[in-house]
Length: 94
Image (spheres, one colour):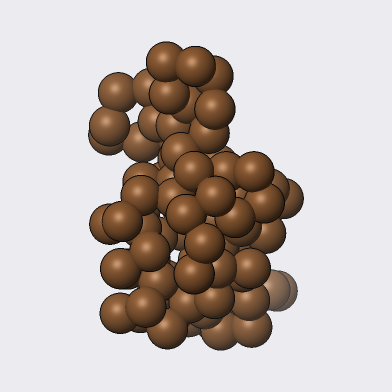
């Protein structure tokens, strides 16, 4: 794994999490670079980026350093559960 993959700085913590969680650095970078969604993180001035791959949602936490370069702080994934169809009472259909 590369600490400067695709021009982004990767912390040791993020690289460790990739290894521990079996996430490829390419998938994590693609999530950061082209997310399905994003939101503010709990960490000041950081963002969480999300992307779904099959039945897994990869989440990447990143922020800019004092020089304006992006730093990947952490990465994890969680299973995506299918949406259940809403049950409509029969009396509402009549």
